[in-house]
Amino acid sequence: MRNSKPVLLVEDDDVDTMTVKRAFSDLKITNSLICKLNGEEALEYLTDKANRTPCVILLDLNMPKMNGIEFLKVAKNDEELKKIPVVVLTTSKNDEDRVKSFGLSVAGYMIKPTDYKIFVETIRVIDRYWTLSELPEGPNGNGLRESKVEVGTASQT
Image (cartoon, rainbow, N blue to C red; front, side):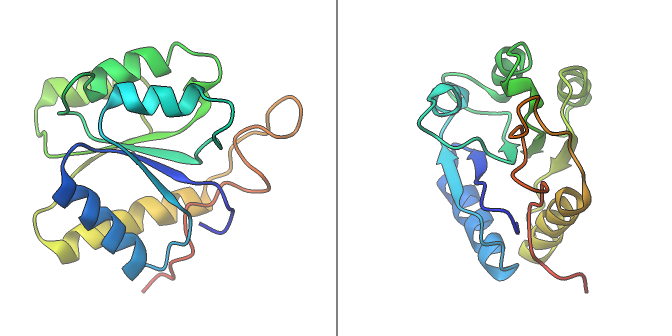
């Protein structure tokens, strides 16, 4: 990401978290990665005014305490939180999960590949999409973006 906003990763699996961190490093994505273990922790982070608003949320679905669908139901009913783009990054191939996720206005639904090279390409695609996407400014000029919502600096190969 060329802007300085963090990316919020909501993921309970340590190996998956480390894989995302490694992919960010390999792709030279310099935005900080804020990691939360479940939807409850993510909501606590997002509602704390002392924390920076992420430019995008990468959300797992299968988590303890508050799963991804439960998180989306709360976040997408909040006037501020619903403006933050959410990309589901999950192992769930369940059609019901996809339908529920898109019904709750996610920006994308990606299946976590088990092959690391394919995983990196998945993160590259997410990065590239949000690098090119333009989101509206908030009413006071400091909405979701500082200048331009850009999730990465990875070059396309």
